[in-house]
Length: 357
Ligand code: GDD
Ligand code: MG
Image 1: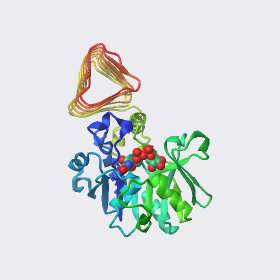
Image 2: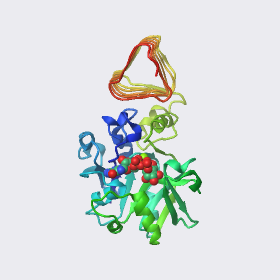
Image 3: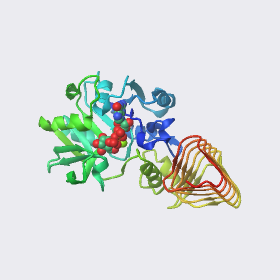
Image 4: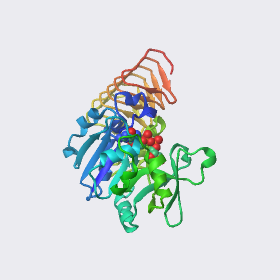
């Protein structure tokens, strides 16, 4: 069985982070995001190949994952000549498939039991099965209504406030029958959410819901990107290899410090936080809760970080403060600068001494 991972979006809501780092490989702690999804797909022994459907900066992704040997699952790349939308991409990537295929949005992190989703699809002899998850506000997602027999009755992408009739949304995980792909026009941008799924309902096909109430998040906005780090530090997401969670399992507020980092005497660490290889934290600096420091970052004397995600190779100068913000690679935060409340800095940004953002 094959899995298609839709990972060709431009990641506009995560800009400027995604200008040099496509969304599928933004780091979550010290691992590119896609690794977490491959861990999930590997839970199903039947899935023997992952097809990565790409078009935005495909080379960057290929360089990391290669043929998948290091990840323990075969990976093939299909690069669209131009973005074909979510359905167009599935058709393009799934052209040669004849058996049921798992399709996954490339930006969701979850612990759903994929094996039982596939089992339900088979049991119901469905043409399509889709994982639903409850959220507080469905407006940023695809709202999906199912009846008591778990048949999908309505699919409405990005509903307006007055159109919200339930709390279940499309979790971006499907099992599909490739012989339905002929409904998707060839080589034309086409949406799985706005066109393909509604067409299954119109034709009264067996279109089934699998409702999942466990951990699920779409990492595609800065708020959610910060939240996923927080959730892992709080052990709300355990993951499949458990490595990330194991780091935070020692207690509710573990400070994970790489053995290859150097935290000087007189620096203060308040867990939970994560300090990667080669990081230097100088005396008097305070790394507050829910902070993440990527490789080779330098935090100088009396700088303060709280709820800050800092990518590799940044310098946070003396007495600077970074709170509730995301800092891209190779940034320089000047002395006594204050960066707070939802700032997102692209790679190589320079914040001059005493600036306030
Ligand atoms: N190959 C390819 N080509 N991939 C694409 C394209 C394309 O043209 N457009 C989007 N994708 C990929 C994105 O990279 C992402 O992984 C996935 O398809 C979904 O696109 P998003 O842009 O992240 O959509 P969304 O988050 O607004 O909404 C989707 O996900 C929600 C769950 O997170 C929809 O599927 C909603 O219905 C759903 O609720
Ligand atoms: Mg998304």
